[in-house]
Image (cartoon, rainbow, N blue to C red; front, side, top):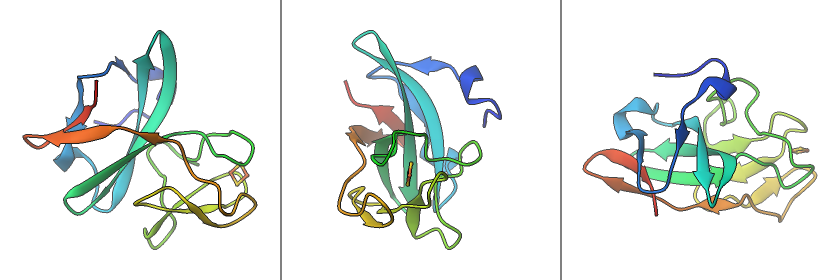
Length: 123
Ligand code: FES
C-alpha cells in the first residue's frame, strides 16, 4: 500500500515492521513516519535487490524532504538517491552525497533490519 498524502501515513514505532520487502519496488523506495523518543520523524527506505537502507527524509543541504512525489526517492536510472529540491545525488549504500550543493555530506542513517521478509525499524 502507498499513501499519496504522506501526512496520512500511520506512525510507526521502533520494533514494528514498516512493510514487507516485497512491498518496495526493486530498486525503489518508500517513505514512512516513525516516532522515536516522542518525536515524529519522516524516514525512507531504499531497496536494492535483497538489501534495504534507511535514512531520515531530510536533505543535508537545507533540510527539505528528498522525494518529489510520495515514495519517489531515486534518480531516473535508479542508481542514486536524488533530492527533489536542488538535485543532489547520494549513494544508496551509505548516503554520501556524490554530486550537488552538499557534496561530501551524508544522509542521516536510520537503523532498519530485515526479519522474515519484513522491513523492521530497529528498537
Ligand atoms: S535541499 Fe537537497 S540539494 Fe538542496
